[in-house]
Length: 106
Image (cartoon, rainbow, N blue to C red; front, side):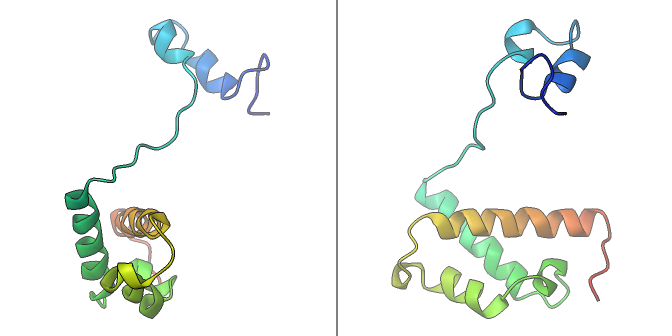
């Protein structure tokens, strides 16, 4: 259903015909950009810990706070490489979404 004319996101692309430049409208889908900059990674870890330490953070109702705190406080002790940072990104984004839309978790 999402594929129209054998093109992914075909419905969306068709809807924007004439509104977006063709090179934008028809470009290939790309992965979410990531950064391995140490300053960015440190900021993400700090933000994650702030959320985990906030008793009112809505995302905490859905995650294993102790496990994620361990990952954030001791990243070198975990054999998970950069994948933990993707988890932190998603946690931050999900928490922001839950707050923005006033989702009640308790």
